[in-house]
Image (tube, each protein chain N blue to C red):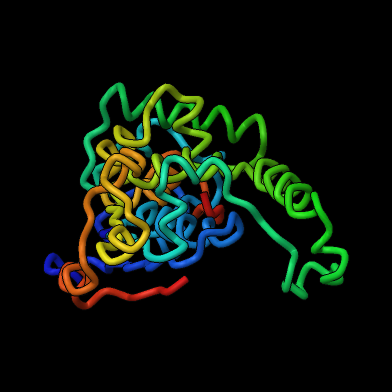
Length: 103
Length: 156
């Protein structure tokens, strides 16, 4: 991750995840996505907004399975939107910590 | 490492019980979730996991499994395997683990490749028609090793 090039007003951990999920703003998401080489579209936002809302409700980052079951974005599409490792990329861009789940 | 410099996980699944179906699927899924390539090779009893007639009926048996704490003379009683299987399904559901069929579909949609072992197909007298749709091909062991050159190999 090219975090050195990121100029963000918030604290990131060693792996580039937001230390405090409450610091998150859509602008920060745009910058984190750009750092991952992703330009955010409406479909990306559908995933990110679901993840943020679900996290606010449950206090846990949703698993990819939960995302694909409930956000209206299929597994195939999720892997296209966030290529090469969607679990970490979705969590990072949505301002959550590194995911720990197995599914 | 594969040609494009990504890590690749090669997973050989040789067991056909419900409890042994999950490790390979969980690992393949985890690999894909973090951006690794994943290729699964099903062989011998592991073929049951991708056999569409058998897959919905995979069982877990406490017989000969000291980890369950159940003595074998009890584990061997009629109905115990079905009961243990039911319990395991329930526990997996509580963990938000998908049933095996859905899990295979998920890892395949996630980009994992799924292969059936040529020798086992011949031995069990199976054809392509017997497999779930997610199977990408019936291949020999050499072909699998060729396509997973440099991969990290896991045998289950």
